[in-house]
Amino acid sequence: MPRLPAWLRHRSTWIALAAGALGFSLLGVVRLNYLSRHLPLPPGVSVASAPIPVRADDVRFLADITHGDRVEQSIYDRALELIAGAEQFILVDLFLWNDYLGQDPGPPFRSLSQEMVDALLARRAARPDLPIHVISDPINEAYGGTPWPGFERLRAAGIPVTLTDHTRLRDSNPAYSAFWRWCVRPFGPGGAGSLPHPLSANAPQVSLRSWLALLNFKANHRKLIVVDSPTTDGTDRQWTTLVMSANPHDGSSRHSNVALEVRGDLAFTALNSEAGVLNFSGNPIDLFQTLPIGQQPVPPTETAATVQLVTESKIRDALLAGLATADEASQVDVAVFYLSDRWVVDALAAAANRGATVRLLLDPNKDAFGYEKNGIPNRPVAAELRRRTEGRIAVRWIDTTGEQFHAKLFLLERHGTVTLLAGSANFTSRNLGDYNLESNLLLQGPGDLPALRDARDWFERLWSNRDAPFSVAYERYADASRWHALVYRFQEATGLSTF
Image (tube, rainbow, N blue to C red):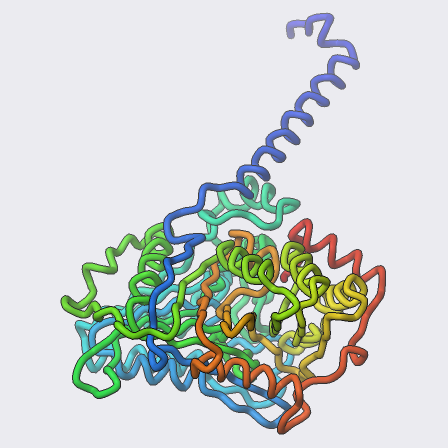
């Protein structure tokens, strides 16, 4: 056997080679992390439409409210009604869509997931040629671990179900994503295995790859429906867009949520964005070729307001732009499930310190499908905002009893004009930083516009406990713990969190 050259027989040489290989590998990981957090955004992502005029009766605010045994629901009742009335087109893009109940079933839940499936199947049976497009997130099938029976029913009826391709989206969890892209993704999606299903102990078991995909913390978090619907007088058809914070998920059926329904041209902007999701997820459909001819409505001539579709980081832009105008004559009301984005936190503090009246109505972050949470991020964020503004920001907590206060809403009233931002996005870096897919609507108009009046009334009802003890004082869940504040800041900065 030939003898190694002298320079290869020195221990220092092997140490240098090992160090070089390690350094090269680390450099590759750093480069991949950077690239995965700065991927070029595909078409349809990070969209802000031009303001679209709407008449007062073309926009509607909807809300679901839960307090103990009291459950008021209107959002999915309306969603199912819109689907049942569609004659020429249906598109739904919905995040959490399954009947898995998590750790503890708790009280009886509404079968929202099957109701939605049944509604789509009924329209397919009644109108076999009706174009129906379904988009959702791969979490519902455990990232390839096991098909969800509801989607299988849709597929069997010829309704395609497109699960969003997360690999085309930026990574929010850099400490883990390079490992996932190098060592997990090449082996394909998960499948059947011996590990428990991530969403239910009663669902089929899945493989390790399903869990490793889950830990990458990515989602198509949008929740919207676009259909044709009858006009008010029933003589023609019009486009209707419903954008929500609500999911058709049985375990979420008791959550409190908000939604905006808009009739008219907004649908075309929404469909442009959704066509992008279909295309980069492997189902390149030209949605506009499937639209019925002659359906584009005439723009309203007398308008009371404008509405915009804003998605992903454009939602943050809209939030910051609104807060930047807030002064001593302004009222800012925020009702949200998660509040953690540093840009938004800073802007709220700055607005309050300029004299704006700022009120935060927050979920205490203690309930999650039978699991108990530690109050992060809302409690340390609330404590920080109270401290930075010397108590000028008022905070109340929704008094949840197992369900979640799942709303995502921002209201700004300034000099007679009201701005309402509502939809799917929590106010976190993952939701507002071009990582998750999100869809919101930005509505602006006079305070007496019915949709704006109803949104303000909804907030005031919960804040002031008008007819039930919906909310409790800040002190009930106040948490000035430095440890929790440190954990929140670390998780928000690194992406090592589920919020």
